[in-house]
Length: 163
Image (cartoon, rainbow, N blue to C red; front, top):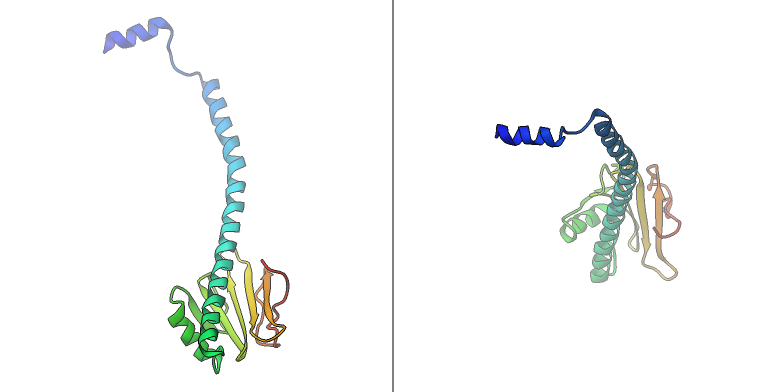
């Protein structure tokens, strides 16, 4: 073993110099400085897409309930109960409790044919959807950085383009 070390020293293999190590560390630091903001942006977009997907699943479950009964139900509490059975992977709650994560859906039943739902992504954005099952109705989307009070109007404060 000592002979191997002695032979390496004779051949001039002494390891890396401090300058070489510093250059490598500097290159790694630059690569990390480029990668971290990119990663954080991708993470934020993924969190937003997860919330959007959950709200779409919520509306799909509600539409299945509507298809069975031709109504979303008598009141919000009945709809929350039906949605809990139809979509158990999400937490359903009536308007008044702001959703804390993308799995919590804030629900408001405007009438037997109009439903509003809202959730919060892990990145802090709020996404909502209003679905109207009447002639001339449709779906209206919300993308906002602040919680929307859905108790006021028949529109629930949700209008805009698809997300």
